[in-house]
Image (cartoon, rainbow, N blue to C red; front, side):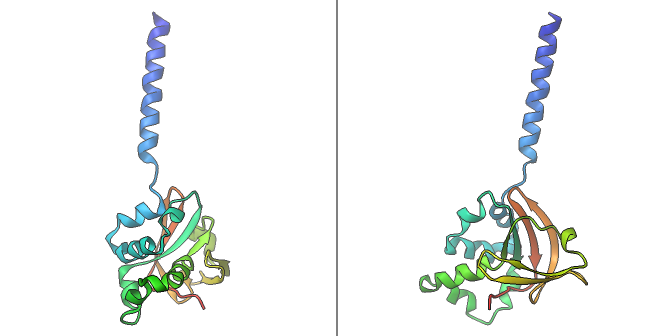
Length: 161
């Protein structure tokens, strides 16, 4: 009888631990961005570009995510032009320029100047000697952890050369 009580107690504890750990799992990059209204343009462009599955993949990825306000700084008509089917390759290039393979936390960057290879294929310049900037964009929020990487929020859309 005593063994039965211990077995039941162990099963309840194990079940509770499994439930609480499944609840605590962070969402992936796409779901995290989709839940935040400041990324509606980014999420829409990722969908049009066909990059949802890639950014929901295992990663890990570091995403420098421009806000809706960042997209609004682009010249009038730029986003609409990028969303046209004939410009899909250009849209993909712009979006993948915002993604670096691996997980790079802000603490890994502090005090450094470096360049990092993007998924687009060229390098982005990162300067973390006074705050953190990526090309001409400032990181305005950092280290948003997801199940497949990290998001750093930027105030300007960065464009590949």
